[in-house]
Image (cartoon, rainbow, N blue to C red; front, side, top):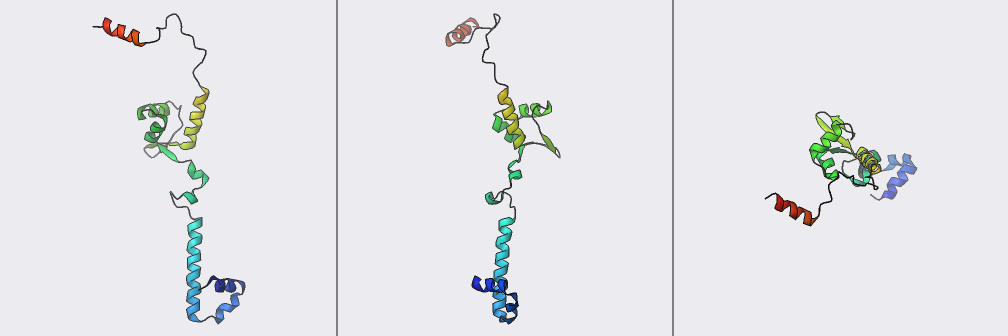
Length: 141
């Protein structure tokens, strides 16, 4: 059925009474298809890129995912969470980190940069060089 008949029926619903039964079935079929398209466009389907809501972008990460992102061992991530340095939440018996919290934590760590004016004290060992490590290896034998 061409969409023009459906459009005409929307403009003048009283014309629906004059439609033959086979045309009525076609109109109803077209309406069902339109309804299905509408539902697909407005329904959030997990993982579908066109329907991801902004709050869904802040997903929950496992400790192993966080450890991969930070290049740390999972035990160190658990330790940071236990010391309340890295915000996390418990979902049942599982520990999860919101991706937004992780991003904020990383940005906060950026402020804690290593002091660039560091000067070694007199008690600090000299920097290791290839020659010093070879000499140290010969002394230990």
